[in-house]
Image 1 (cartoon, one colour):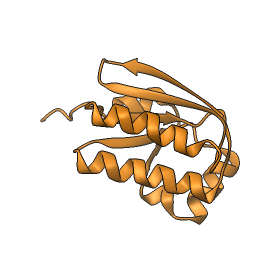
Image 2 (cartoon, rainbow, N blue to C red):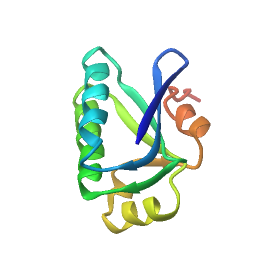
Image 3 (spheres, rainbow, N blue to C red):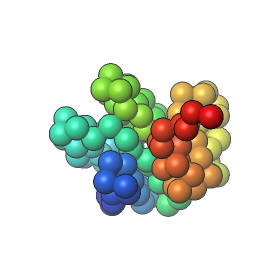
Length: 117
């Protein structure tokens, strides 16, 4: 699995995950994102459009990422979740923990402050 990072609006980090998220590569994912979170990153969107596989260990990593960000007042949102990844999140009921959006743009928009009206 390869991870690619890009910034949007200077404060949202988009993580593109290619391949699968499992015990072989999840530690690298956690270490890299952990360093960014320690550095002040609080808004992360994980683009799952090219994520083919996620193990139970990979699910645990996403939950830890969510918890770590929540402690700092941040959040992680998932985008482009489909196929078997969607089924796994539903079966494990993690779809109620994570905010899931059909595309990265919509996930990023949800980080914007709500306007008083």
